[in-house]
Amino acid sequence: MPRKPRYYNTSDFYHIMVQGDEKKYIFKHDKYKRKYRYLLKHNAMKNDVEIISYCIMNNHVHVLVFCPEIKRISKMMLQINTSFGLYYNNDRQKVGHVFRERYRAEAIYTKYHLINCIKYIHENPVKAGICRKCNEYMYSSYQEISKVSNSLLQICDISTNELNNILNSPHTESKFIDDDSEKEDVEKVFVEIKRRKDIKVEDTKYISEIYCEIKKRCKVTDSQIAILLGIERSKFLRMLRKEGIKKVVHR
Image (cartoon, rainbow, N blue to C red):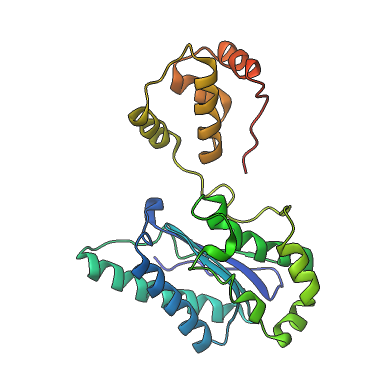
């Protein structure tokens, strides 16, 4: 069956995300990160697509691009993911899907959203606990962002000061494409937690710690967590209140 074409509203800036099939860690080893980075830069140049920022994590990649023709972006991503998929499967002597889907994309319409997207992309390894500062991560464009050409900054309508101010700000207010898709499967997380420690349902502090970890890693309701723990919902909520936890918002 032929794939349906992608339709976008008018915008020349796109935040793109690709993710491993079933959220697998397809970039866990550095050689895979290096290979994907090479393919990204090589095919962006070949298709005349400007890369503004990128970050290659263990199971997904973020890229922010500028291109007036969406067809060139689609062609670039097809070339990148096809080449990487062949390389990955050949290296591991496996067959099958490597990526969850071709890619996901969202158009960026405002300067504020654009600069926040640059910041958001570079903060991924910090939020994941891989490093303490953005400049410590090797597989992002953070070290390169200061070298963004003046012509591209003019296209973005961004001054160097504006870019630096928001990159150095402690807050990122905009919501982006992967906020929910990066969440882990709650049952898998719960099994992992049970392997690490015994579930002490009468220990209020201990239960609150488990609650916070699950909320941080998964998109799940308080009721679902109570069911997993085998605790009556009303009792579970009382335990959380006792520890001063009213609500943990999905990040």
